[in-house]
Amino acid sequence: MATHRIYYDNAYEREFSARILSCEAIPPDVSAGRVHQAWAVVLDRTALYPASGGQPHDLGKLGDSNVLEVRDEGEDIVHIVDRELPGGSVAGCVDWNRRFDHMQQHTGQHLLSAMFQERFGLPTVSFHLGEDFCTIDLRGPEPSDEILEGTERAANRIIFEDRPIVVRYATREQLAEMGVRKQVEREGILRVIEIAGADLQPCGGTHVASTGQIGLVLVRKRSKVRQDWRIEFVCGGRAERFARGDFRQLREVAQTLNCAPEEAVAAAKRMVAERDAHFASLRAALQQLATAEAALAVQALPAEAAVGGVRVVDRILDGAAAEYLGLFATALAKHEKVIALVAGPQSGDVVFAQHPAAGRDMAALLKQVLGEVGGKGGGARDFARGKLADAAALRRALELARAML
Image 1 (cartoon, rainbow, N blue to C red):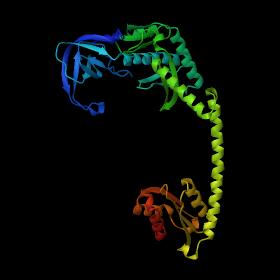
Image 2 (cartoon, helix red, strand yellow):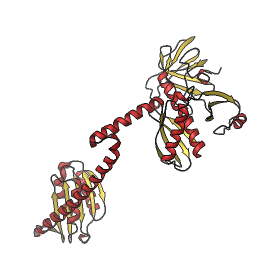
Image 3 (cartoon, helix red, strand yellow):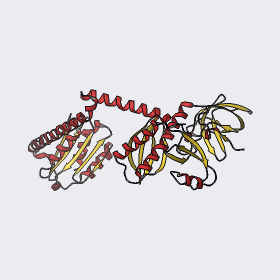
Image 4 (cartoon, rainbow, N blue to C red):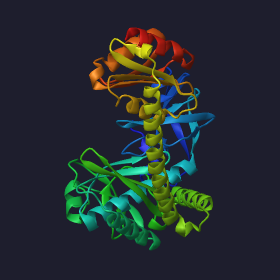
């Protein structure tokens, strides 16, 4: 006996009664987030929607049990519940807040997809209704900002007109004559959602009764996904929450920048430009300092600092930024036959660099040292960088490197 799907004809029925056809114990399913035993219940009728077509399943109750999942298994709708149900009849109810949210998102998707296709020739190839936001994947060229805004505006205009939305049943041939948005190959009688004057599309999901109940469509962003373009959007209550959250963040940014919200973008651009200018100046200053300190270090090398025909400078630079270690080591390595062994005690970073004429292999040297003291890193023949597992071992690491040379 097939389960009668109440939601097909009345998505607004929140409470229902049904006869229990079966109730079987099933083991835990960690992949589904269930760590305890559950029961699979089949009813003769249900208002609870199963996961299908990009729309998640409903939640709710059957008697005293909580509905954890709803599955579509052919002609049967299977309800996964957290406790065993006795035979006979049972009263059920739908988590209405979740259901209505899904109705708003799914109907908004139909309208948005219709506008993308009708106005810009961009068909929808997939839909996902997530916990926070929804997405549709469009096939075709990249939709510009103007296309996204135009589609959103067209969809919201239809929402504000509060057009009726009805469920119809028709064959594939009848749908083709009626102007269905997406051609279908399935035979038999199909369930179709019609948004008056805007869209006609086969769908088994739950939808609102008029466009006004969608509330609002808010398109947020696009991204490339393989050959398609993924559009992120929200509708109804979610659109309200996202819009409020976006404005709250804009206001906080404006307060931080000491400007009005409408001036935040320009102020942020100025701040980024100033930051980049300061960074460039700082890096130039650090480069000059590294060059000067490297020259002094090489001049101060005692004769016994030479190892195998090369001069070695080993330094632990207390308080130096990680960036400066590289600049200092590179500046040292510009001097004839100089090898630099530089470390930073705060970060645990080590940098090995050499003048090409020194004739050693810094990457191999670093690998040997890290093999002794522990850490990760790598590089090339003339420059290598790593990070010790224990910053306290820096002095030993430099001593090992000098000995290995």
